[in-house]
Amino acid sequence: MSADRTEIARQFIAGLPHCDALGMVLTTIGEGEAEIYMPYSEKLVGDPESGVIHGGAVSALMDTCAGAAVMSHPKAGPATATLDLRIDYMRAAKPGATITAHAICYHMTRAVGFVRVSATDGASDVPVAAATGAFAVERGKS
Image 1 (tube, rainbow, N blue to C red):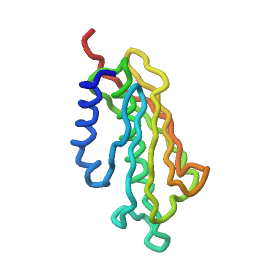
Image 2 (image 1 turned 90 degrees about the horizontal axis):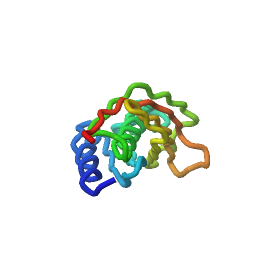
Image 3 (image 1 turned 30 degrees about the vertical axis):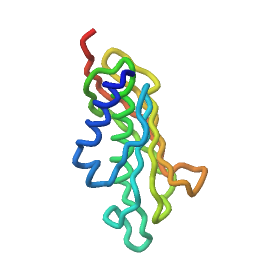
């Protein structure tokens, strides 16, 4: 992936209002892989008694990370959109912990990128959630 393409993907993610609102930070992107973390925030809590982050915030993190991985794939075009994202929540995230999503675009067709994503909080070997997805790909001019 060219440096220009990487920068375009970084700017795209940085410009998404929901990423800013949820505190997401893109740490790694390139060659069909991406990593984004989301620091713990009381604004994201879904259960005030336990302090656990809402599953919707985790879902948004995983979806954004997966899209970034697709955008960074060498065969991707300039844009992508989620077609399908199936998430398995395996356990509650540890209250107070930063959640990190890591995505790999493992297969690309002419029109669809296929992705695997995991979300971890560093508190266990078991991920908080795992997902697979399919993303529409706008192809660049060859």
